[in-house]
Image 1 (cartoon, rainbow, N blue to C red):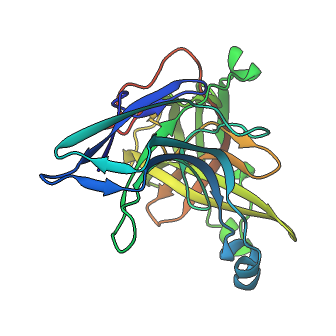
Image 2 (cartoon, rainbow, N blue to C red):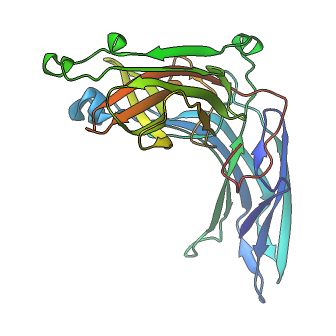
Length: 310
């Protein structure tokens, strides 16, 4: 059994028509069956972090998956397939259940948004049924009002701005001044995240400069809200001691499936942040945090899934 979609990259948008075929090889002698059915399912799976709320609370405060799509299509009524290969076409409109909304496909740690096709052929008693599943991907357009404006963010990092420093380390902090900008903190996920960094001065040699993308997942439960921040990716933008006043480009591609548009509703919240890490030669590190708001514009559609990018 095989599922084939007419759209090869398996990427769809709300209200798109999803079409394809279920292919079954009945062999040389044919196959009797009790019906062939295609199920269309979409859900949000939520999991509480034991690290955030405790092992006991995480075990007993289970969260039910949120059903977004639930559809059943009967392809063939009970009967018998003749020998050879058979193709059974299907088509449906990509719409959410009443009262729900479609979200971007997202593969996270504590929040996952998945959409799938599940084909089943029941072969009767004492025979193993045939099953086949295929994930497809959904992209939603969410134009933020802030995206219509220029949201360049200038920043400056110096010892006077540092927080969460123990008293014993204050006297050992080197003199430094880092300046730069981010082109936008309201970001289109289909476009690169860009900016620039300049090391104006540093009394201690720099070992490395890194850019870390972080997902912040929030799930409400009976006792409150569980919040967990985990790394999506980390890229190095400079290695070794950096020449002062030399512009260092900031450039990051948002990885597909592991990032999505920012979400905030009563059931869960999902946001993203950027951490800029400057590591000194003694392995102490200065970090600046930049909250982001992600959206997807309607200008372009995704081309291909194999690249792993938008």
